[in-house]
Length: 122
Image 1 (cartoon, rainbow, N blue to C red):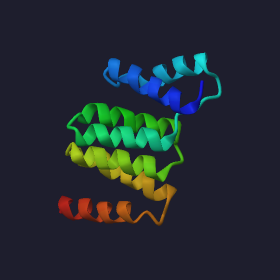
Image 2: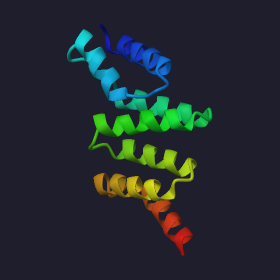
Image 3: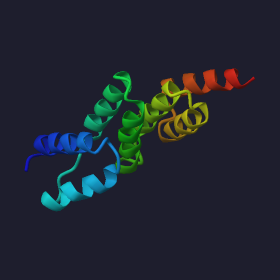
Image 4: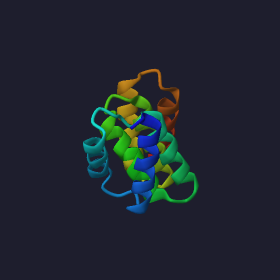
């Protein structure tokens, strides 16, 4: 099973399950096609698309799953933080922007967002 097809299958199954329990779903897919990975950029795009379509919980689930699969990705944590900010969860947004910045000290978006959140707390 090729990687693109695996992601399509993942997305179809994830959608049918309301984008819940994504680690379990990924394990099920990997049992069918060992060694196939779900690309970070595809998860990121999917999560952001869901957010912008107003499916915030589903988008956050996908973005959170991306941070599990890619725990060293500043971009994954940055996108998750943006999702939390969109959902007005400033504490979790702050926490994830901090993680993103620790992973990439040059992440200007995280720097700017953390400054904004700190100002808003005053």
